[in-house]
Amino acid sequence: MCGIVGYIGYAGALSKERFVFMRDLLAHRRPDDAGFWQSSDGSVKLGSRRLAILDLSPAGHQPMVDEASGLVITHNGEIYNYVELRAELERHGYHFRSNSDTEVLLAAYKEWGSYCLRYLNGMFAFAIWDERRQELFAARDRFGEKPFYYHYDPERAFFIFASEIKALLASDLIPPKPNYKTIYRYLAYREIDVGSKTVFEDVSALPPAHALKYSRAQGTLKVWRYWDLDPEAEIRLSSDAAYAERFLELLTDAVRIRLRADVPVGSSLSGGLDSSTIVCLIAKELQGSTPKTFSARFHDPRYDEGKYIQKVIKWANVEGHIVYPDPARLPEEIEALTWHQEQPFFSTSIYAQWCVMRLAKEQGVTVLLDGQGGDETLAGYHLYFGPYFRDLFLRLRQTALMKALYNYVREHGLANLPVIAFTFLPQSLRHPIRKHIRPLAIAPELEQAGKSDAQLSLPHNFKSALQAALYETLTCTMLPALLRYADRNSMAFSREVRLPFLDHRLVEFLFAIPNDQKLRGTTTKFVLRNAIQGLVPEEIRLRRDKLGFEPPEVGWMRGPLRTWIDEVLHSSRFCQRGWLEPKVVERVWREFLAGRDELHSLIWRWISLEIWAIVFLDNMHNVVFPEGEV
Image (cartoon, rainbow, N blue to C red; front, top):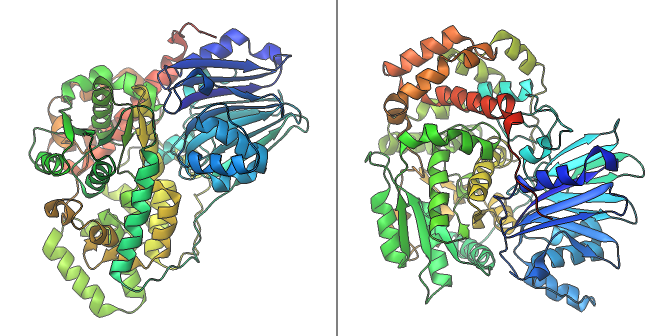
């Protein structure tokens, strides 16, 4: 795992000293080693901050150079199947000097070129400079677990990239300007981390499952998608048991290869179905050892998963570690948290995850496996019932629909039905209704700028509304933001998070099997529940509720955070941004304090955006860069 940076352009435009400053702003991601490489004329620079996970020796140092081919690589992430790829490349005549996955990745590119991406199973963002061809090839993993940001200026003929946006801004080549279209969509639609856009005007993200090639000689930049889910793919097995057996085989192997590390490995444990499954699989794979788990708990019993967490700890015989996030510390840490996140975030649950990662560092566990991705592939959120019911309706299965609706209300009550009904509506009607129900307070000037932006286009060739909804949350509306939260929170404490549910083999399988293996009646994650009988405690396998690291946000905002929030919303800087209408903000805040709980998410969105503006727009130039080491 590494924090990576790179520059291609006029040598005098970016000094070595400034480039090292950029690199070392990523020291939190990788504290174990620092690397620097530049071309003979200084016009190409690559840098790396390394967190040693595989091959802790100096042989894994980056940037890594292949003298024979003139290739240089800087790599962030892990190639989980590097052992198998190494064996294949050795059959092709390759000889390796290290036990690192980076050397295997470089050899794979040397052997197969850009087609090497089809062989990779991992989370990664890497760049390979071809000194002979004067070309840069870069790619990001299929779901975007690892970040890659860049700026291309054809007029000044330079290309610059980094693992985090702050490193790009530190180059002094890119001003920290807000992207008003992205800010509007964040406020209006709860969209962030979508595609190539960021909240910074001149910073692009390489989207998940995309690669790019920058040709210095031709002055061209090409970006393309190298992988996607196939809407036509179908897998049909003989029985529920057969689906469960194949699912467990794939998930077990995903866990097995993600346990490859030369440092301590543990897991995040929320007490929910997904994280409990991962913990139990880890315990099964690592028999004879006692892995550590890390959990957030809350004093409010409505949000506390303690009884489930303790049950899994005892069942799997793991060593559990608990943290109770203190809301009183959040105002003290919010700027540091935002500095690492780099873009606004939707919930204080991000702070709970921050505390869990800090706990893992205190306990000396470097790698954590996590259950993220299970909900977006197995239909774990209640919002998926809307498209599921819609599929039943469109297929004229009225009896099944009525039975499912009846059972849903009986089990979960009426509270979620408005959300479910909302998903029946076309996109063109959802925003006006949302705006009417919960005043967004967006200033007319910002709304005008945002509305001029093109709407996000998603494939419409899935065979069912449920498949389309899963694809949307997996690639656009939910998972990309969740992956950014996890990457930045873990890297803030030099930890690495690995996600078995996002093994592409497993995801491809889940999108190809029938929908009733994901949702059946009112049962979510049907195939998972069948697969883990006897592996996890029955009380957890049959759980119907869902919390995760969700804090008692309403209570926090009306209690320990109230004074701080009030100060932020009434500050002169907040009122003068011009993004929100202060009078509407004041009315919504008072309505929330008077009892309208549902407004908490909207208000937090405003707070997070304002803190982001303070950190990156108001104070960016006050950052003291760390001393470089080369």
